[in-house]
Image (cartoon, rainbow, N blue to C red; front, side, top):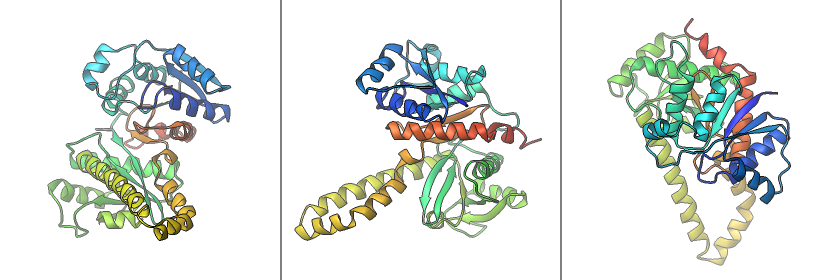
Length: 328
């Protein structure tokens, strides 16, 4: 059984939802979990939620990093924080991976400075999973690197391909560059130079990809710099929230609309589940020497349960070893 360190104090709903999700995963034998955080608060969750934890340990941490703290200052001043201690467990070989729903910037820096980069990897990248009409696509980088060079995007594509094959079971995944058009000459200099590198690689490169094609499932992996990726991510979340609120408001305006909504409810619930970030667990940070899963800041118990599941599967499939051999 693999061991996953869970930052019990990270996220808007910590520690209640974080602990509940981790304990559910450990109780089902998915992994042994080490809950890192305030021991008294963790045990209070056990009592309040009537949890009967199995396959777990608690590592007490006096401090935790809040969502709005400056990442650099937080890591420097809070060496006893739950996030830092969780990363150190992975570094020391006492855990096979870690999960945190905490401050993204702080987690990035903790992973880089404590775990370190895999040899040969120039920059780590964050994967996000996107539903499409055929299933799920991956996008990277989703926010780790605002400024990129063509060789970074090439490595993002290589790491994403390994992850898609080993974790998602996608054979020979199709890679595209997220761009403003599909023609080879479209885009800025970064995209044009990356196009040439990917075309010469041994990856299954299918060319430039517009977001329409991405959501239609024409590619398994879409690569871009972290600025573009994070803008796509934040915009998509905002549009989805807007549509949900608008639809709810319109449904309440007439009896016919309410009746129609009731008839469509089973289908709507299926779509909602397909779009729900909780079902994905979190975004893997690729390129560091340890399995590291970043869950959404609003992660609930279901999110953390799935994040632990992903971390355990990544450990079982030796994802880090596969990436270490990438440049050999």
